[in-house]
Image 1 (cartoon, rainbow, N blue to C red):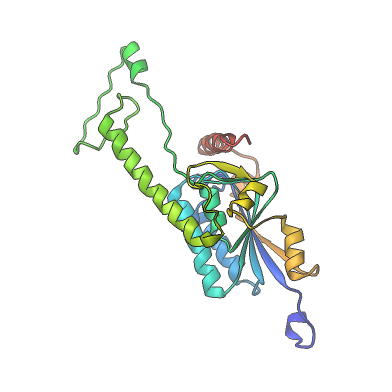
Image 2: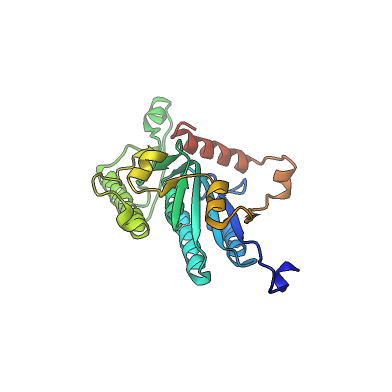
Length: 265
């Protein structure tokens, strides 16, 4: 009723969207554009929000999914003229920082882990194990690079060079995104693109974030203590809500925990 009466001032509303977990993981409501996209669309359009707040807790993941989610955030923000504020919880690293940089302003806790502006490819080599146990690896391809970085064969110098070239190109895309979004707020006194991480206060000094602050105090200071928070999130599948776990979900959980563990979390 209040919104229909012109002589009554409506309380401002801020939409809150949680971006949690490793990016691109399938199962367990993993963080990817297909899953979070409809949530973001609703957050930007329902009830004319004064702002959209992103609660970010992610160690990164897929560079493509990070870019897709970040691009969607910017399209919606520009289309609907809604400012976006990012709030880092435990970590916004690698792809998690890509998402944070898609906001207009970034806030973090003093102990939040921020940065890791780099690209990583990790694997294993099992060719010695196969040889010691008399196991023969049989692979047939059409195309000399089709079996590049096969973990069951010795590394080839040309494969490693090709992989490093691909990682370098993705890294440049990441750097371009951060420079475009953060602009002259970034410190010119230090190389910020080595993959290093920083805690909140140092990240602020380097221009990677705009301030130390938490969701409610920052929002109250910006929009008044009468502001309403409207929270949006992905709906979990019925089996997840009932506590069931499929094998794919268990695998995803292990991968996600390994990603967080890189930052001591």
